[in-house]
Image (cartoon, rainbow, N blue to C red; front, side, top):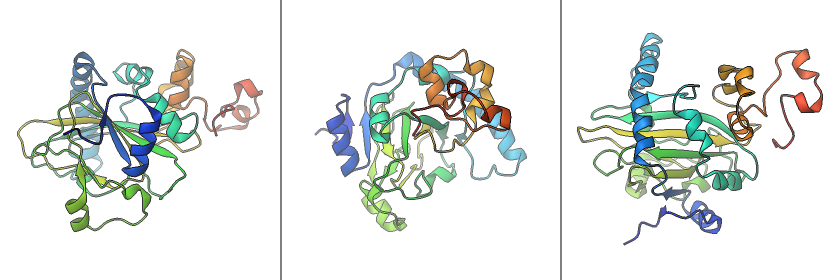
Length: 267
């Protein structure tokens, strides 16, 4: 029987219905095997760098397997963003231009207990029908019941209150999905990573896209550099937030329209 959450087309009518009813949708066969290998290979060094900082700053206990802010000049991330995966759905959901709020990864290992296994939603304030954020997961290993496929409490994006644990785990659906799939979900949706009971890694990219006026988790334009931004195409400049920056001094503020940090069309 067909999984009611799995689709291969980009039909926005179907997208609207599934997202309204359930709050999440799976698109299969989005990434090819070679690109997945490029991504997973880059996560090895990226995790070492971030893990060292987590431990040094005393927050390593519940951060196992989590990698934050992978946007860097020389890794897969700019190539990934340039592919504009599900761009039509994201723009439709957020009703206009959008920017990247965060891009990270999770490496789910046996016996780990990272914070992403807690029941949570990814936007702190319930926004109801006013959509400001949408989440994307890139499935880098098959998601199965045994290796910790994410729990999604379908329909919970319509309610503010956190469900209790018993209700959540008795009623949540599981995001069983093939390697190379993309999952989009409403940021109001209550969810939790599952426990990996196998000896293999279960890896995924995790990211959020928002309306441009929503503050990014990391200031990607300043991190990458304003001069570097001038070398990017217009689509990458938009999604990385170069068109919705905040001036830090009067000289940056007092500029002609075409040079202003907050450009037209950003909401």
